[in-house]
Image (cartoon, rainbow, N blue to C red; front, side, top):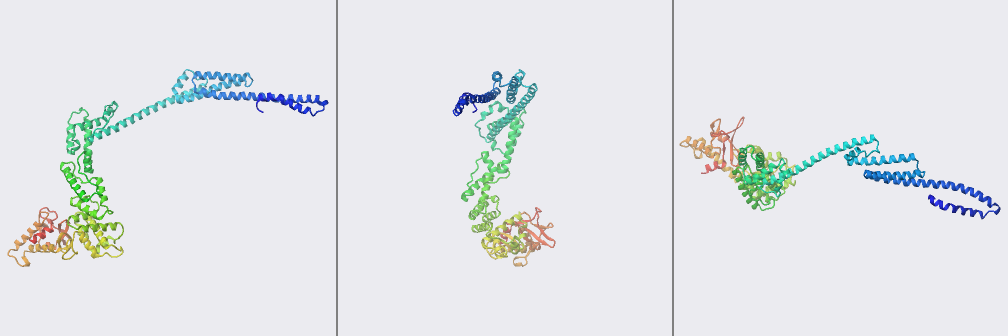
Length: 613
């Protein structure tokens, strides 16, 4: 039983009940003595229970006081000084009641009152120093925190002052960051407006430029200059770099204090530099971006080749106009993106028939340089020169087979050595000889693979098939090294060389011998002639007639004679272009042109035509 009021109520009743219970079993003669003993025992027990009841009441009062102290303390921390003082008075009254009831000593009460004030003020001050340090200093100066020890108030003053300084520094930094962010936003929009003006368009928010903070921005003059130039010079996007240079020079001649002079110069120079970069990097795309009416290009990967070819022709004419207009010194008919699409359309995985058709269309329109794959590029040139479409498809189909590793060829040296011991020299003197040889060998490999179907890498190359493949890849018809063969690779003057399509080695060799006959001054059939010197002059005149370099061939400054001509080998350096190379014990000598002093170059077709008359 812990409730003192309940103890006071039930104790007398329970004492009488117990007394009566025990008296009933006693002898009447002993009843009086029992009552005396029972009363003495009950009184002593009542005293102990009374003491317990008093202790419980005091403990309950102290618990109530503690709860009040906690709640009042929480309130005192959060209220103003007057309300806090009222709470202090109420706390004092609660504490004094404990003293008056003997529950707390006056000394303890005085200590509790002091601690309550100090603790609540301290907690309040801690929050104030963080939330309102200047307010704390003002109240401390007014003496509001008298319940705190002076040294503690001094420490809080220092902390509040430090917090104020830190807050001011943060505010300055934040203001600086805000200003920079605002400036960056304005700057980005000014750049966008200037770019829109450069593109000869009007931004929807050009009224933005009227704001004072915008006009104060360092990028404002450039945006204003760009808009002014758009208004004044609508032709600016269509100017050549040279015309832009002239406009810049004109702007530089204006007075130094002319409105926005520096910004206008900057904008013009940037536009000129962007134009130079744009025309050089991707002329067609830059022309379209600048507002030129660029001929459209269909989907290179899907459109019919005829449509693509027609578009390339229009693009080529447009590109020529850009060149003639002085916009650029070199221009491709396709944009960079279109060239990537073309690369995909001509990839080894694509349909060989369409690849051949597309490569031929490009080569036919002087755009073979756009073909990155050397085999496809060679096929394009071959078809344009008169090669059969079936041959082109076979080459590209064979390339596809090789790329899929369905056929593995022997090593390059093993393929070439048995086929042509002179194949290296065949291309050595041609323009881009190594690249030319690589593309021709790759095309020959492809055609060989297409025809052999199955190849054992360990087995020797089929020399006959490989020779025939090389012959046809080089534009030859008929069986290699036969009388009916034309073009391709053939032996002329004892050396393998490339001869023009449609030309036979027999006709080339006949013309070579007829010129030799003229140079030695003999008549038809090798018989004597009435005027040998006239005949030799006729031979020299023939050499001039077939010359592509302008003069006649010389060695050591002297026009070559019949023996040098007979010993000379024909080295192909380009389509129907040949140099004369004369073997000696010390190596070879290349004949020089009598006029240019550069290597003498002649046309085999002209030579044959000269002696077919």
